[in-house]
Image 1 (cartoon, rainbow, N blue to C red):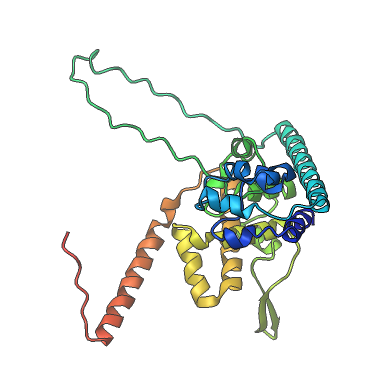
Image 2: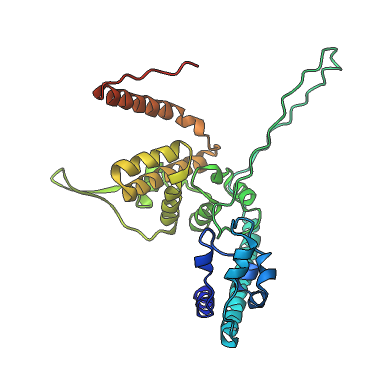
Length: 315
């Protein structure tokens, strides 16, 4: 509501930022909300975000308006309220981080033993040039609401494995799991029991050994909602899980595809935490190969129906 009040004040002041600048969400927060910057359009235009493609003159023109006293007053109060809320959120994140460091992990993370290698010169052999080691890419923020701080390392210490390497699973998803269930899932006998507790599997209503209705039970479980949001984020994921979500979405529709992928994410998380093994996408290599064969078979059948023949490109 506070952000809407600031937008309403800018609209009353004839401030058409969304019209003159349709290719970006707005200028930097320092010049978007603070009223003192609107009195100097040229200076505030220099504070625009680096992702904005509009010229500086376009930004300065967009910041021109009928800034009357009452409009600046409302905008100033909205800015103060927004900064106050952000300060409270940072305080809550800091308190949660301090509390998380006090929690003990159920498993002990064993560090690998360092191997000592002698130089080739000491052994009388010619030195072999080693290829440069590529540093692993740092995982980017997947949500603007993700708290600041070394949460990925802290969650890895708490769970014993890094859950954020699973496609679709973010720090917020792992935090929801930590607050709802902790790091011990041995109360569920199998991954199927865990998925059933989350209401992510069909509930068959039978009568006289005949299935009358098949539907997924509804639930307000926070972890279930977090896994469904994680499954929805697989739409642009370039991995086996992303390909599977897109196939199910095409065949069954978005709601059923989201539920099915949330079910698979729940089974993966249960397996990693109970067996304490790292996530490895190579286990899906056979499934990916089978999917490629099926896709090629469908393409060949379509080509034959149209009177063509597929020929592989020579390497």
